[in-house]
Image (tube, rainbow, N blue to C red; front, side):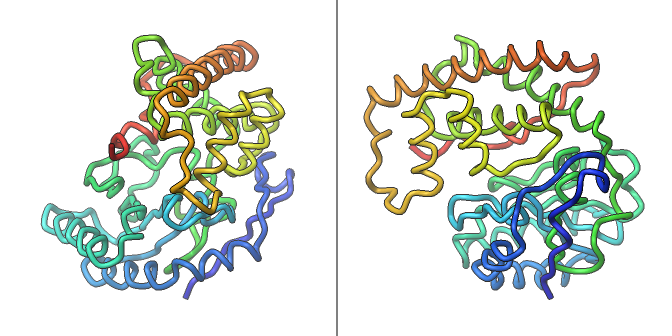
Length: 303
């Protein structure tokens, strides 16, 4: 049975972080992916002791777009996964993709029950067609605490460590300082010719700005409105919106080499200037190990 935890939280309830989403839209979106999620829950649960399975990100926020958004899941399992179990789970994902193309966007991190106190611990993960290990980030844990969609078992509150406002802010500042600022430099300019770097760079900057400024987590759709209010290049914002929300992806103005070159330069410079200002206003992250960005395991899009 699929059920959603409360997704609208007052400022006094969760340290000032609020979700701007609607339960009705979450229920509507769940209907579009219910068969896929039901099969995945059954197949994974047949191979490992599945204690709980939760969705966060765009699905829980009411901003999921089939075929364009990721399905971000976290599974709580009853034991540390050995090599054979990990191989079986990898096969589950591969078979699911072969049968249901939408499953390409289904990502899942497997966290052993009782192994949650070390928030930097890396856990087996399937994402972007790869099997690797990564931690459950502070952003993901905050999303789960505020608006998880419970696909199986109990809700995550009390089963995963909470996230203080300070930890969340430090993580976001480190992401900007250690990952995003370097990739906006001249040496990485060619990356920005690709849609994925323009989209994630612009949207990540806007979402990070709101969280550091107002203490809120916002959707990608809301991030587009934030970009407009920031004075972002209109053509770039419109291009991102069309690709995420437009009805006809075959009409692609960004296919022009000239357009891509202009868009890349505008987006890269806007994000670089914005991050520089944001870090100056909200302080630099404390020294320590750099956080791994969500994008570090995201391969380039197809040519």
